[in-house]
Length: 239
Image 1 (tube, rainbow, N blue to C red):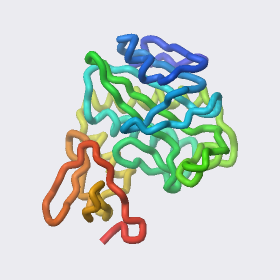
Image 2: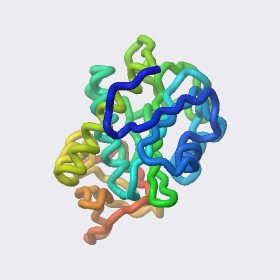
Image 3: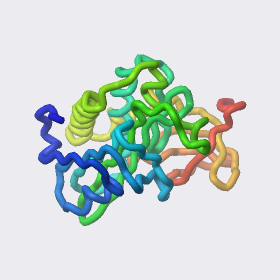
Image 4: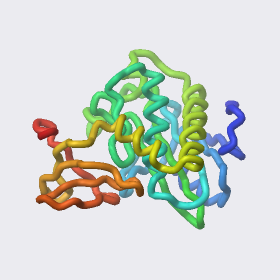
């Protein structure tokens, strides 16, 4: 597998099987390392949730960068939205705060950023050619193949993702978070949505902070969500 000449990738490692590309990448202690595996035995999402990682069907990758930053999941989300929209041509690709990409309300991509020793692992899992799912996620997950009715070339998608990551990370490092924030708000369709907090309180999404945290209004008071989930009221999503 060959990659385009991209500044953010200084070294590229392909693995047949690994427990977690994030764990592997962080343990090297290297910045600019791209790790890709054909399968993961212990793939994870946020809060330790399992990420189903069958062999050869999907893309499991991690890119390391320096300095932890709460905005990385938003930047990656914007980059992946660009790639997945261009690949599928669908208009129902949504960035779900803080770390998912959805197609038609189903999860096609997950993001997990983890830090260790001043290095951050930008972990990405994309469902590409999978068409059979475990029963517990069959109604919640989708692949690019299912969304587009044809299979995809995984190395081609990897290249597109690396190029898009380089583009949006460069924008962030050069111009700050404002253009990233604007793109997220444009593609998340979340402002004004009614939801419930993890403890069941009704709230309204009103914005995204410059730190990448979701701003909600609960009982007339504005609060900032750093890592908590919210649950969208599907039947009454907007006032």
